[in-house]
Length: 167
Image 1 (tube, one colour):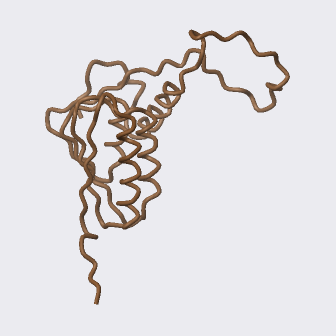
Image 2: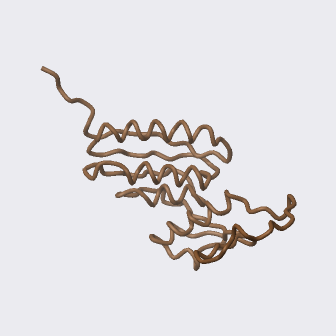
Image 3: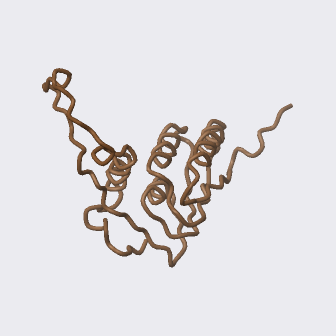
């Protein structure tokens, strides 16, 4: 007779670095595997200085949104958070944070990002000269999306760019 052990409460460590995109690629894969086991609770322990990149935060969000409806996510943070890291913390059904921790969001720099209108004939236009200073940074577009999602939880326009916000 097989017994189901360990499906109650699982812990998953996620370190916060100011670098290390490959670390997050690996961790998202492992997070998806842990969530596929459909635990009742999964505690996401976040610790470290730095910031989870916007792209990694959005990938973690996608993994958490795809989980079983029966899995409760607990986000436990032992550090101050900024940007994408704050988004991951906010995605928890139950959020724990160190008493003296703070949240910080910078404003997104979206100059140069324009949306194409659906009826606009964008294929017929001649491309304008583009140099290294005029390209749109995809990371900045992802960061703007992170702020959009954070805004579902907190008033980003009022908090972005402020020195600190107490959690």
